[in-house]
Structure formats: C-alpha cells, structure tokens
Image 1 (tube, rainbow, N blue to C red):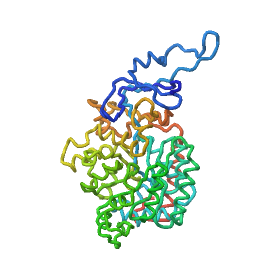
Image 2: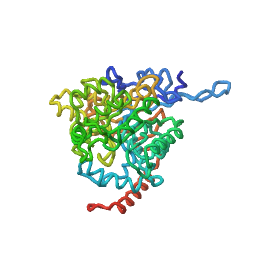
Image 3: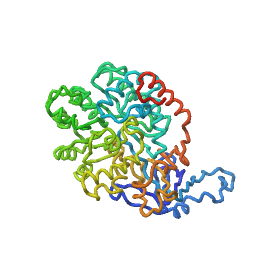
Image 4: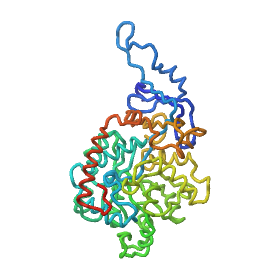
Length: 481
C-alpha cells in the first residue's frame, strides 16, 4: 500500500524504460512519489496538477477549524529535461578511484601485477582507504546519473558505510581471492569477514551483498565451488571477472601453468566451461567482461539465464578485445553495462559506456542496426537492475518501484540541440555534464548538478592525500605530483 504522495516531479519528457518498449517517451508527464520513496503514479503533468495541487496554489496548511492538514506534495518542474531511471553500473571497484591515472597504457596482467596489487598490498588494510575510495566513487557516480552500482573490492564493511553516507544504492561484493592478504589469510577468513560485513549492515536500506570470487586465475576450484554453494543457499548473486582476455581462455584450455592468466583449476578447459562443471553458471552469475566467447558459450549463458556486464571503455583501454554484445542480446542473454574501475577507465561515466556499447556493437557486427539507442539505454538501467537481482525494485519508472530517478537536461546547449528523439539524444549526444537532478529512493541527492548531502571539497582533499601517499610509496617515472 502506497503512502501519501510527497513529491510530484514534472518533466518535459519521461522515459520509463519498460521492458516491452524501452524507447517509449511520455511528453510532459509527471511522476508522483510517496513518503516511502516509491512511485505511485506516472501521469500527464496537467492531470498531476489537477489531482495533487499546483505548487503556487493557495495553501494555508490548516482546515477552517484550525486543525493542521497534511502538507501538499512538493512539485519539481523540469521544463527542458528528460526524467529517466537511474543508471546501474553493474561492475566497478570503488576503492580503485584512489588510483585513477596512476598507471595507464598497459595490458591487464602487467597493470595488475606491477601497479594495482602492490598498491593494494600497502594500502587497502589502512583505516578509511576503502571508505574514502568508495565515497569518492559514489560522489562521481551520483553526479553523473548512476544511482546503483555493483562493487568488487576489499573491505565491504567500509564500503557499506560509505554507501550509507552517500545515500547511493549498491550491491557490494564479498571478496575472496586465492592467496593471503592483509585482509584475510585464507578462504575461511575471507568468508568470515564477508559474513561479518553482511550481518553488520543487513539493515541498511540501500545495501545488498553478493559473493565475489575475483577471477578463475586467482581463485581455485574448491573455493569457487564453496562460494557457488553459498550464493545458491543465500540466493544472492555471484560476481566474478570472466573471459576478460584471450590469454585467460587459451591458457586455461591448454592448462598452461606458465601463464599467470591460466585458471587455478587442474582441469584443461575454458574458464566458463569449468565454472559450469562446478555448478556456478546460473541466473545468479554476474560475469564481468566476457570479451572472448564462442557460439556454444553464448548459448550456455542464455540457457542458464546468466548475466553479462559489458565494460567497453576498460576493455578498449586495456586492449582486452571486443565483446560480442549483439550476439549475446540476440541469443537472449541479459547484458548490463559497467565502467570497471577508475584505474582502468579512467572514470565512472555510464553515458560513455552506453554510447560506446552501442557503437562497438555496430562495428563488431558490421550492422548499423545492432544495439539501437533504446536497447543501449535499457542495458544501462533495467538490464543492470536485473543483473543485480533488483529488477523488481529499480531500473525503470513504473508504479511500485523505488524512485531512483535522474533528470538530464537536453536541447539547452549546442551539443544536445535540436532534440528530435530524446532517447537518441540521451545515448549519442548527452553527457554527465547534462545531469541536473538525482533521486535515490525518492531522496534528492543531486540538485542543479551539485551534491546536496556530501562535501565535495573534503572528499577530494582526502583523495589527494591518499594519492600523495600512494605516489610516495609506489613512485612512477612519470609522476606529476
């Protein structure tokens, strides 16, 4: 049962992104939101003003006998803006925003071994490192229209605190990796720390959890199987890097243990086939990257209803290859979008991912009709929600769902004018600089392009301090600090 309507958001265009018609546009419509942050109604603005009262009407807040009356809803007018569901960034590593630009122009494994893992070994155990990285990431994502993200990083406890502070929504990965770290010395400790974080933050309204084995080349079969069983028994997603490079697939198939990309299994098989042997390929699987796939693997993903997170910017920057997105979609696989980390992207901008996903799909398939604008928008919103098992709560503007909403200004600057199709303009022309308003669960977190509840200056001050420490501990020849 819905509560009292407290907000009525009126926009030039409302783009609901419903599954049956993701390109549908409602001109001059309004979204009514109740006190619980859920969508009560989507209706023409004229009708909304008649039903809920205009913001400039004569209102005293009292009945004639002096008894207080419930306040009318607050009206928000967005005359040149498109109201869309918040973006869902379905794969990122928030703590790595503190490594943004530390090492560029390197292939994945060299970058991991020479830069990322040495820095993480020295800093991720430090108090507030993961918190500050997550808060920096949340600030960037909110200002660019992302209202939900799937994280895979150390210290989910600190990440949960940052998510709660920012008001953003998250699926936090409970990390497991097949070697000792400052975070945990063995698999039992990784699982124990994950369960502790889950229980501690279970009541937070915008936080959910997933099991997150890092990758087949860093997690052995026994641990993968154990986490698959935990994922099944708890009915939570299993978030993993998979088929990210050609070497990962070929070395694993040949069981070439001289390659650091070879999976840790003792079975000669491509990683997806091995995960299937272990029982992990199911509707709970959230497979990040999936750059290198053959026809049979695409059929398997579709059959098992697994989700794939396509990360076009990161895959291009690391020269990992080209995901067969059009073929995946054609086969019925749920394809979401992710930024990966700001260390390999180097931003968390879902507008970039949305446009690149559409353009790359056309180029790879040699088909200009592949991944049209409405599908790209759906991948960035509703498909992401489905991948995170949140499609009943978020991802589209529909009655009963949480009001995770983003207002994007269109047609008021040269780069987005004229507007023939709001959806086309959103995907191919607009950028994060056009985001004006953001709500998560009906709570307004961004207004006029600025964060309402976070101190951007303090967040950046702390990120700069961490950057200085990282540069001193792990200097690079091209350091500009």
